[in-house]
Length: 487
Image (cartoon, rainbow, N blue to C red):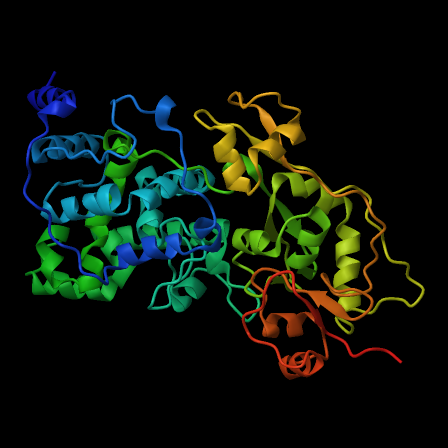
């Protein structure tokens, strides 16, 4: 066994009681962009309203107390990064800058690190498939963690958008469309394909993955300028001081994310399952206009839920498209959508006269299937109480829904967490959420402008006039008038 590997193994096996002091890492500026993306993730609707709970009893092999934040010596940290470096085509080094980002993920933003570890279950399979297809090292998936904290809705102060944080001009160069209705920079598949093509282009320029990472963030022009100022040397750490300030942290943060995913357990951090995991989400191909609110009504979900899954559609509406587009749905909702696709299409055209002619004699399709029950598959370490908190129900309700006599559950067990609504003969004579009397029920995320957009011929001023004045901040569940009374 080589000497370095023997030293590394010995260091990694040191017990917790042998932890040593280490030099303080560099302080990150308050406006650090990596930290800003973590804060954006924390402010997402589904994160703010999702309980941060996890039973670590089945994961904790190091004997940590539940709230313990372990501190490891600089030697151990350095040796762990050295092992990662031996198995990576990237140059993974350890220094005070890298340590500052390791501390960001492992100490200051522990909850968001847990959530990102969970979100990886949703996005990493897609990332790895595309990276492998393009011959790019699979570790490049960690770049999306740095750029967006795995938040497909992420938007930087500079205007970069999506999981891979494309600026509008660069996105268009790589085929990502953006208009008033749709922004493909949010699309998981299309943006990942574009990111792979862009990264391959940058690697062809520099022949170095660290410089390609820097150029991905600030553009080849700024990297070339930094190389000239450093005397022509093509080495990331030698041009570090000449790079834009907001770019300097990206490679150190990338190294820190590699460390996070390899050694989170040693820091008493464990994945928190996101609202949707890879096996709980599916896609349908849509080639006609569609309102996500209509799917929510049909499947018993919420508009906010579907908009969180589909940030590509800026107004919550799939526009008339030339080619099929992917719409993400909870897996339980997919059969309901497929069996009622004609109803949804009819609903959109009926609510938006002029978008496509409908024969006067055409009869409205009807719902052909009851709304599906919402299920949750129990994971190792989960408790009935934690699942109840996640879905906003009581433990007693979960027991009743599933015929349980105790709180004992087992991994792999499928629990009903929301009962489906009975089948009904809905017709599509009004916009989703509206009724025949001219009222509309406000959905989460609605604004006066978005409601007006769903009701052709109705303006924001009309809505205020019909309702005696309305605030912009509408309460979900409120019933407002969208049409003047008839007769």
